[in-house]
Length: 300
Length: 300
Image (tube, rainbow over all chains, first blue to last red; front, side):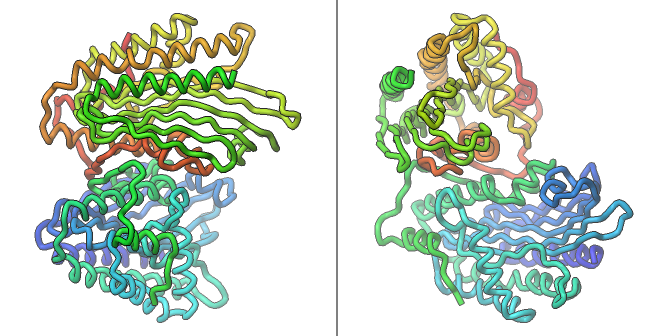
């Protein structure tokens, strides 16, 4: 399974970066290969200062070795080895009318002292962070997410959409990071689902990514914007930073277990503002966004 | 003691904001009074878009009530009431040759069920974060810190300077946030020091703040800078954000215990950049700063 999934995310990284380069039309991804001292490594691909993408990364990694202390604690085991691989992407567009997107699909195995697999699971999802809300875009993104889910089980979309709204909650601001999408974790073998069923589901979701996001980029890339729109985008990006550095389990885990810092923090936006006690004008588009972030909606 | 210290920080806030307004010459602090639902409140004063200060805050608060869960855990007590007051300031200058400064001086009391003080202590310190390193400025700042310490005990400066270097360590970057200063906590009554001695020390440090910082501002405010200098400042401010949101106990405590978010996060810089895998040119002034941040120096 691990070879099968790592092969999949290598191909998916190629597919996604090739398509995004075509969409951008101006700049290419820059690739960095890196090794992890304790075992494994990754292939980081970053795009900066493009026509469309101000900054973004589409990274894969495949790491293994002894379970780091933080994971031993979390799983309540005294020792053990692990294998983990995954693809993570974040795209920060220049135009404030094009939303930021994040996605991550990953696979994890844990072994006992004899090297047998004790447990294995998939996790991941994707979510959208608009700066200006177009209902049409939100519905499109969620519809693609739902179709990918529905092809496997008709309870998945509802469950994973709710988990996403809960997970990407910027608790200290009492608002969501964005308008959600899917989030799932610990997808293990059950009586109903084999690991191959899990693989088929996660790869269906991964395969749907470009369809969920690229049409939105194409629809909004030409919308003209002012410095005020850009300021609002940069202020909202501050909330993105706050979520990632204060609440995101994946980011904090990476920072505290000697991950490759530059690959982890490629998720941070290129230019960000913090304005004291900022409030947009009443009845503005900015306020409409905030209302939806405070009360996550059903989009399909 | 609590009335004595709260009176002190109210006066100190007035003194500091009045002087900083004179230094800036262009803008004034904006004041927000706020109440804490569970008891107490604060007086936040923020300055933005000044001639010198791009953003900054000089805040006081005085809060009391039942110990929040996080503190009960930390102190290993099942219940109890507390009182805490303090002054916190952060100043982010516009000119990259003027350093950012942070300071905080605070007092804490904890009570048993009968309302008697079980324990009480002072904490705080101040530290400097330059974007370009002038040895003369670093030495000045530390000399003022040392003089304030030496007036009370000749072991204080060495100890509190080391504690500062250890505390403001951006572990995931393996570098200090800045060039340090003083940091002390749990200054309780001992055989050697009464609480009044502690008060006298902390207020000596607080009184020395303007002398430690303002001469540096005056010396560098006129240095002309380019967009490249400003970009470097904004990239380094990213590290400031990373420290405050990932490692700073005070910030995380505030965010997780329903503190006033805007007063806590006034510490975040106004404009920040994250550039993937940024490395300044060899033998540059930027590299010289990084070397000192990786290997904290003795300045006096």
